[in-house]
Length: 288
Length: 302
Image (tube, rainbow over all chains, first blue to last red; front, side, top):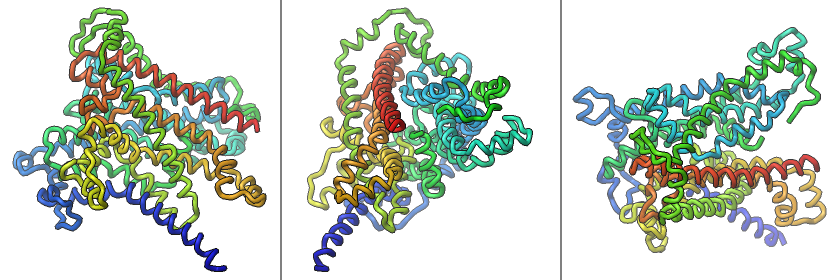
């Protein structure tokens, strides 16, 4: 009798265990494999059957971050490090601009006192659904004319297409969750709308704003097309840099693996440290 | 959502002006992108070359030329096949994983963190990672297949398998999005209804089919909306792996437009392709958005 009841339960936990194992393998194997590859020397990389045990080396990371022997001798900044700094400047700048512009806009939308607020929100959303090239290709021509091609200002501006809607949609969701009584109290104390926003509400939703900014930063950092079309050698971001390095030299798997790991760092850190806020932010941005 | 119970200070004329002022910079910035967009539509009607400013108005010439190009139809069908595969694979898979992560176990917290990881990796980087693993001769995936007794797969190198391979990479990156949204949906299922059903003797499958699934429907539509819109304009993973090859097997409209502009420098033709793609995106996402809206309304009315 007890066995009869225990068996299905055992079967159920076995099934769960298999499902969990399959999920972990599918999600983690590529990351672990490339992480291992980034610590391998050339011989270990091309070995077949693949090697799971090997003597790790930091040579790949040294070369992409400190430069090849030739680059070091010439005192040049390694190209990948340059790309990395560009990505930090562009995505960081884009997110700061979006927060300054987007937070007041999100507040105004969250209060919904303007006619057509819903439509405005859908307009912001609809930008996400248009193919990027519809805007980026003509923008290439315009940027060339006005001198914004391959400039930080130009890149920060175009990244608003990613970061601004994200910041607005996510932050609107967080503002909505604040009970309106808090504002009423502030207003009764004689504060204006701006004062209420900056002194009372922003501190309350700061965690929400922060998670919106982190998400926006990652999606801007991860983007390829903007950099591919609108950035040249000066402002080339890391996603384009890694691709070009690959195209010129198909064999340098180790460098590619190391670069891939470095390029994925912001996302990885965010996933592990801010996991809860990120999931909440992503959900709010999409659902509400 | 309008707040009819909002206090009167929210409706004063000065207050309203303040709200408008708060919105204007964001609207200006986004609507500024309408200028290049409209410029692009005009460009689609010319024979504009990328680096030559002089262009002649040729009406619908680019569209006619496209209609007579076999590759255009291939790219159009590839775009639709890619999108269909993404939806057919990722929504059931995402739902399955969400249900798995909804079961209370000790490992749940760890898995909820882990499962988000691929979504935060740059798609280009994911493409390169998988391309490395998919090498037919020396790649680790074929080694894995062989070590469990399966024949090797040609992955990205064969026109017959390239499409499913890029969709697999897309699935690795974007299924977590479906999981996050559907998990949020699952957690919002009213527990009292579920309890009542259980008390009435419904089994797990009935609870799923009759209560959870209908409740999840708007969430599923939402996932479909985002995944369809993103897959129709798929570019980054394909660009990082096959660039549309082999033999156009993975050439989507977005990839074709990029190549047309930067390889053949025919900006006019590229914009015509992009315009066709935009119309498709607009119609399909509009349809799904409308469907989602209706469901939301029905729920709030209930």
